[in-house]
Length: 461
Image (cartoon, rainbow, N blue to C red):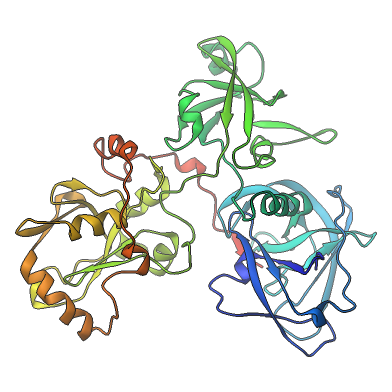
């Protein structure tokens, strides 16, 4: 409870919810709550409860400062279910930039040795003065490690709340939009004409970021808002501590500017970059909770997403599609990898019924930007044939009149109420700026390094 009729919990606790109920400790009455904002990247959700009865006698939590190592910490929650509250104690083991499992993001996190289990999610963690230092949200499960739990610190929580107050909604943590390389080796620093033992190398600049207009591959970032960046990619943090460079970026809000000190071809210079949330080619979550889809003569098309990848096994997706999903960048806002998910067998699509999880690249010779673009191309097609071109030069051809005639019967046979999701009923609006990227190469062929990919050891609490 944070006062003003609002509650905080984890975003993964309210994902795909149709109704949310809350109750106070010692009370047997449940009250309906609604979600005001969800932060996928920081795994925080803001709820509101309108009932005045719920707030009678309630005391809001007071946020404390970021703790120190070895500070005592108490975690409160309902691990493994149960109706009575559970309290576990431990100490702060580490404070560093941590991989958040729910949003696959990297933000400041507090590692503790107190037991955190499923059911602790969204529960507060207190210091020995009774101040809330954060929210329990995930634990590390491994045969090689024990008692590793994670708490979202109050600095991240406050950023989430400030973002909501500023914009009336949650806009997300910003990203610089570049891939970086450490410069620990003195030879590479000498080759790049970096005079001191500092800086990180810009390996690749995201096409959708503002940095694409300012930075170039081969630049060396030596400072961020006048804070020097070390050759290991770290910056000073509190007293006698260092932390990952990404921490400074996460302190900014979407639309904020950052002053970068760079070295380009041995020449020091200052540049300004506008920070915005990262544009993902393959999203980790689906906006609105329901996937977009288009059914044409039994061919089911949908954007590739992490929930779809999790639902399918690697063998059915294929290593090439997985590699594109993991290591590719979006080249413009709204770009999607569209796949043929499955085929609803019918006479009109005979010969294609075994196709599944194939990336579609073109329709009648036009490269596809996203699922909405594909729906627009199909609707406006005046050719005799519908020609879908997939990865590895595979094509599927349907006669347009036969496809249109068969579609209602296919939907009826399979009990599907509509040939497309509701979001595809809106008129398609394209961007002229996107066409320059569409004509260059296949979607999903902008590989990035697998060194940027984390590990799967983090689980939701």
